[in-house]
Length: 124
View 1 (spheres, rainbow, N blue to C red):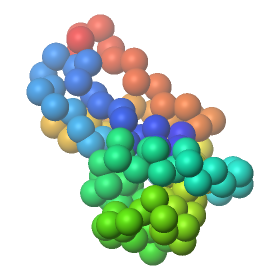
View 2 (cartoon, rainbow, N blue to C red):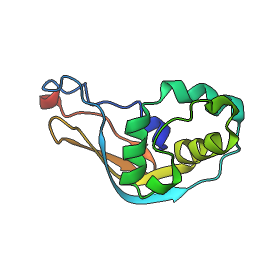
View 3 (cartoon, rainbow, N blue to C red):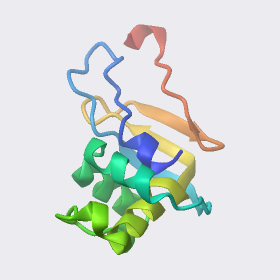
């Protein structure tokens, strides 16, 4: 699961949950997978990302130092910033672990890089 994906996931499908965002990450295996850098694509994704959540996720998987704490004011023209954002958003992958609902503590497993967000019948 890429950290970009994590930034959009919620546990709002659970009946006791009002917001369900951001999910906590408890990683067991994380790896880097090289992905071709595309300036335009990264630039278009930046406004859609909750930057504080991304920073927290990067910290949870051991990559806090790879990401600036704030969005560069002129990020569209800041290649160094875009490359760092690209690295954390697209190249850092949680292979195994759990995503944890911030309101209920329900754990959603991540296996082979795929988060299983299905809830038990009694939870929906």
